Length: 236
Image 1 (cartoon, rainbow, N blue to C red):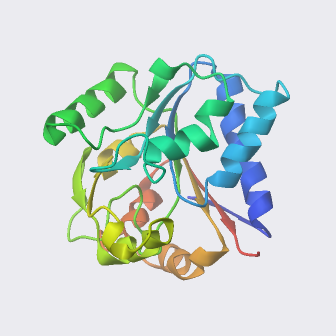
Image 2: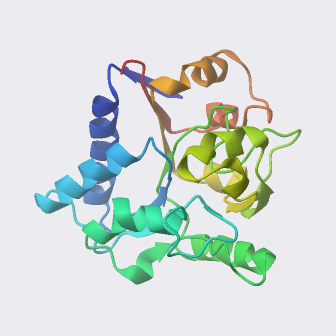
């Protein structure tokens, strides 16, 4: 695991966007795994700016998002589909058919999860996976548990995650209690992983760097990935 510490969130966002753009420029047909949440917003803003300046082309890129809440429509401002459209996809030239986000309102969630895995396999896997990290160490919605879970599946969100996400809703009661998430095996199968962590993640980053691999800190599995870079903004 390669750790890059920077002084600000602005610097983190610039570096992470440059890494993603370099991947696309190296391989225009890149398959990207993308994350939502507060931390990637700056990264996406930088990528949009780079696209507008002619520095990166999304026309052949394929994307797979890590997760989606169950029960929310795509038009709901708190859905991750809406988030991605607002922060990235509506502002670049990626074809709609190349965008893959789990359908949290699918009639058959198990079938939706299996099909999502099949789509990833059909494009020969993910080239670069962008990850944030939760305050409890979750990646995607893979919450602390007694075991690591492998594939895309339905997950029950912990109270810690619900509390962390309630700021986006009217109250904690409005936060969905379940979601579809890529599993640990799917994430670890990406050829390259890029983790971004803001200044508010100091406690969990300390645990991640100091402790050995444990499903109680899901992100700790990343120690075993052969090509994982962590960019941590320790300043404001």
